[in-house]
Length: 188
Image (cartoon, rainbow, N blue to C red; front, side):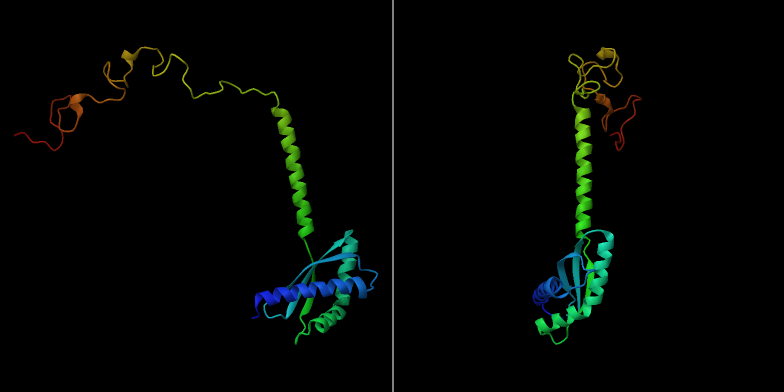
C-alpha cells in the first residue's frame, strides 16, 4: 500500500495530464465537449479511474465514450512518460453522474417550491375550523361536571372532599366498609 496523500497527488496529476491530452493531442472528431472531473487511483497504484462529463446529447456522450476507449493506449503512455512511474496504471474512463444527480435534485427542489407556493395561496385568508384553543376550559366551567352540580358526581367523593379521595376508613390497616380489619393486622 502507498501513502494516501501520495496517491491523491498522483491522481490529481493524472487528471491534469489526461485533460491536457484531450485538449491538445487527441484529434478524434467523435470527441465532444469533455471535462475531466476527477481521477482516482487504487491503493497499489495499478489502476486509475478517470471521471469525465460531456456537454451534449446522448449520442454525443456515446461518441465521446467510444473516442476515449480508442485513445486509452496513447493517453496511458503519456501518463507513464510524464509521471515516471515504474508501472503505469491502467486507465478506465467513467462518465461522471454527479451533474445528472445535481440536475435531478434541482428539479425536485423546484417542484417542492411550487408545491409550497400553491399551499401558501390556499392557506391565505383561511381560518381555523372550530375553537382556536380546543383544550382550554370555557370560563365559568372549570372543574364542574356536565350538569353543574358538584354533589351528584360519583367520582368526586363526599361533599367538600378532593376529587378521587378515598374515605378515611379505607386506608391500609383501617376498617373497611364491611367492618373487617385491613391486611396484615391481627387483633391484640
